[in-house]
Image (tube, helix red, strand yellow):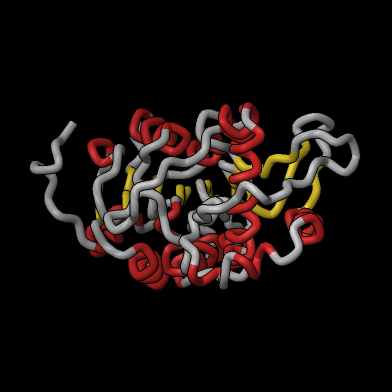
Length: 280
């Protein structure tokens, strides 16, 4: 393996030379959505955050209350975001048969909104909620109506959503949440949870197997906007490298997969993906 000091600085031309004529699978992270107004967790300019874990959410009612209060605000923001040039570039690559599919660690559905069809939402999707007791799935929009009815005036009391820090999982930072009333499942009274994979929770095995198959189906792996800090994404980079597939990483800042990358670009994600879609 090469160290970062041994690796020459890659250019878009280098990437084009490497990937031209190959079928690609893309793995995307929060950095793809920053140009849509959704900040990432670990970018160079991101403030430190301590995400709520699955164990905290299921084990402590006060944590759930705090989560749903923040999410009730953050969801309003994510629901109004739109795909950016990077999302559209990946959809274009799929339309042209260059991209066989896309694995995203994001839950914002912006890839689908941009027109991507073969998408694996590795960590779930922000627009659905599941009951941990009966397994029923409802829309986040329906839950928003129930939460607003249970908490009249709450959104107005915390101010405009633009004034509140938003996190990539449709969360938001609010100090006072003790008076918020979360909604139980309307069918069985059970605990509702976003259909999102929390820290400390495993990605469903069937979803992981489909993602590995998608990597196997391509000639190369393109990683865009991910620090690869969590194993759920890094394992696909390791798998591609182990099977001798070229790995290209486009990300500002170091990633855990840099020593496995064939090429690494420290450039803006949207502009780089747009250049690749125009010239591959």
